[in-house]
Length: 142
Image 1 (tube, rainbow, N blue to C red):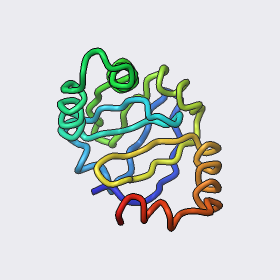
Image 2: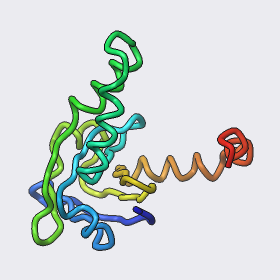
Image 3: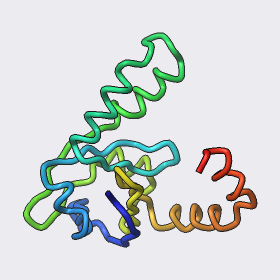
């Protein structure tokens, strides 16, 4: 399970050093793709394959399903971390997420999100200021 928040900086070759705490879970390979809110999703390869199986069973003609497939698969890039736990962040994903150098990597259970530092600050403020957090928990049955 991925937990916590980590601040990192891309090097001059657009390499991201994965948090040491996540490296064992990601050592056999990752898939990076676009998230819905201008962030990058990082999945262990096996977890992405489970998600892909679910997505490929969606109706071919459904508009929402088509949008989801395009967002998920067209932007996807697989990688295997090197010995230092680094992966190259593809340019299309960096541009999509507005990442120049500083990133925040957050564990959200079965996968990881990568945000530009400025966008993560905005999201944190949005979460803290959300007036109906209790209602969200209740709606989700938690």
